[in-house]
Image (cartoon, rainbow, N blue to C red; front, side, top):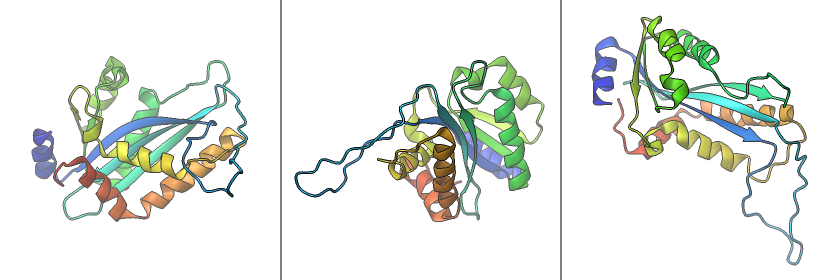
Length: 197
């Protein structure tokens, strides 16, 4: 990753950490308050197979606050519908990030098979403004986007959305709040123990 920092400095690029996650209609459980003797009960829609996938980039550049860029994809449980981000959808996210950031991108992500696939390598090779680096084998603690997911799930704890559309709307609302708090996005990088670019 040190090589990625040097390349980013030389190109004046943003270092963008990437990751994907999914949310289902089953809420994460968290402690809550209730009157003594009244156990809180959550009613869950429980429709299996319905979920949203989220791909996110936590972007950092010297002299700038961190930026959070994301895209969501809904899966309604229909046959043939993509359940997660594939190479073309992720390439579209990278193109949108490049347009928003207005500078080259040094992409850092894990070594999932979808990230190292031939299709993804071909898509990233066609973008002259993009350099790709991989995190070590299993090192989620080095990726600031993992802290984004932790923050998001804490904000959705005990929430019981009725439909996948409600879940997507609420998740986007929470992510948008994070976007408008650049100090929080900077904190996600600080929590990894990595030095800022």
